[in-house]
Length: 203
Figure 1 (spheres, helix red, strand yellow):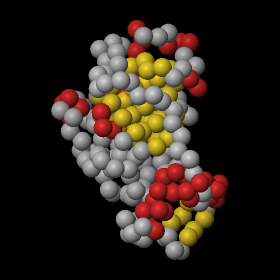
Figure 2 (cartoon, rainbow, N blue to C red):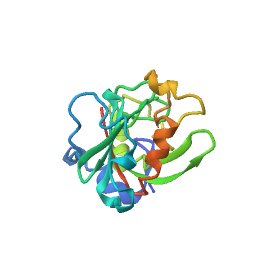
Figure 3 (tube, rainbow, N blue to C red):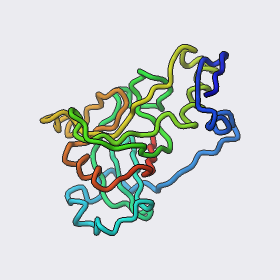
């Protein structure tokens, strides 16, 4: 681990080149978002859209558009199906610190997946990444957040408490920063994603 007393932060040594690259860092994009606001094949089960047994894990990616409260599954760079989602209760702007109730932005991967006693299924996102640390560091330098603020962790894509699908229908952004789906939708998603699946989250 690397510690910077000026910025009050720890980050993994392996991420140091990407954390400290500054303005030379380049943003990457994975997806061309679907046109419009509609859900792509939102009324169809994903099993009717493709042969699940032949899906190649490295061709499956996820796009989350915060402004449209939409998660879209892509296969081979083509949109396959979209789901409605809700986000952190402060949905505008990128996550810079723990407790800001914002949903992160950028490129991430699923680092684990498991059933959850409250949230149905949990797809654990590999936050903080080197990019997350870089934004956190810059926010401290610029005085946007306190030196004592921590970057946060334990962010995922998951379901809602039993009987709470109305929170998705009503588009109520109420979380601490996670991405919530209806339980039937997260069950469907859980069945096709794997550790390492790429996730792009746009404003």
